[in-house]
Length: 194
Image 1 (cartoon, rainbow, N blue to C red):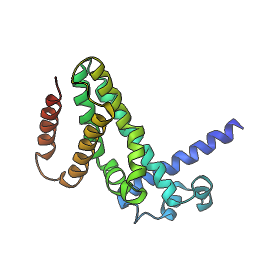
Image 2 (cartoon, rainbow, N blue to C red):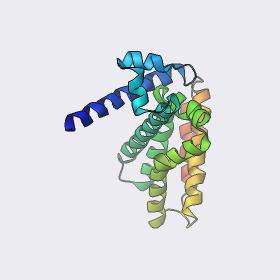
Image 3 (cartoon, rainbow, N blue to C red):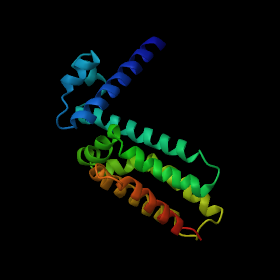
């Protein structure tokens, strides 16, 4: 029984990994399940055994991307003991990870378009936004800025980060845009200080 569970988990992981490459390279619309099946060396039945549709497979891939981005945010933020620096590093990591080629199309372009903003926002809320809320709450508890409604502040900052990532996804070829963005991020966060 344990062997079957391991084999199933391996098959699912293989499908997700191959699908992620295809969704990154070709986009949702131009990705064919047959290509994923062929590259994963599986049958179409195997895909439908684990996923109801191409859209369901894409949803799982997007969830995987969101989870990876959140892990990166947490890892980067933990590089400092200073709470302000943690906030900056985490916000910076979110933007940088979101606009990376392997994440950009899935997370910022096709994700909201294919699954809708409500699904996308719920995933963001469960991953990166959750970490942001925890950090802002800790900082507020330690008196780093005025007592304001934490949910409103979290949505405000998260919305700015998401909009910045969406903007950068289309501007990434212009020189200095990323550096300029990080300078603005630093100034914005500095403005939150009490």
